[in-house]
Length: 119
Image (cartoon, rainbow, N blue to C red; front, side):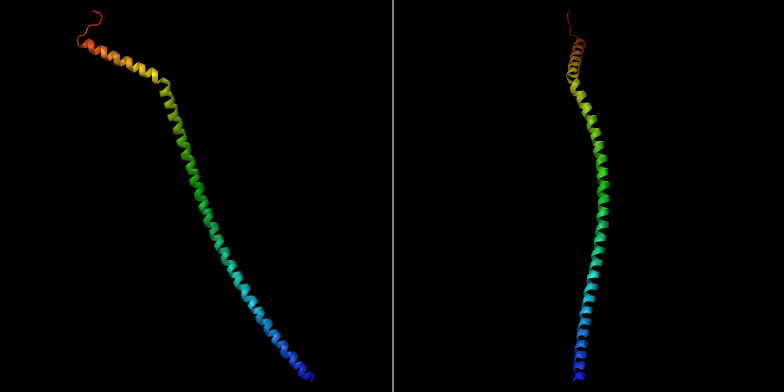
């Protein structure tokens, strides 16, 4: 009876050991798959980081270029503003001078045509 009990216990232990080994193999396989998936995710994220850094660099370069262009345009705007201010400031004086010049030309043409002023 003791031998039979020992054999039954041994069979149960062997089955338990086999089940434990199968469970461990499943665990190892699952863990390996998870590790591989994590490695793939890390590689993908690393590629995304590199791409994002490249895009950031391009964006910063474009922003620097736009800033320089904006400064140039602001300088041009200031120059045009100064010119426009000058034109507005002296517009009436220049218009009066042009009218006087045109009147003088008209008088000169009339004198050359033979018209007499004050005779």
